[in-house]
Image (cartoon, rainbow, N blue to C red; front, side, top):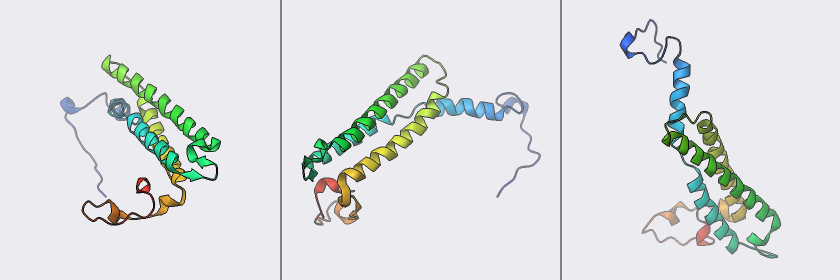
Length: 154
């Protein structure tokens, strides 16, 4: 561990007022986090999950016909859409030279949580096929046979 004692910074190199470091850091983080976009990637993942669910057969037909699965999928779609609009509001504020405020931090947290939820839905959609570990099947040129359906490779 490294500790700094009696550190002196020339007045001309100081950012913000003395003892105002946390306020300056929060302001800078607001703009740092404002450039992330989770929604486009999440939408791609949701579309892949929907295609997987069309191929997953249950006793009553494709998994996409299951009302419980449909509810989970629709709820995630709505959450991702809300995140997408929030990300657009952040970009709008930044392009107008405004401070996006706490929205940037909130979208970071929400994006991470939604990524986890989408991943969980993928696992639920694939069922027991999601636990098959076959990294050799993903290596180009290995031509290893795939255990289970091709779309279930993780």
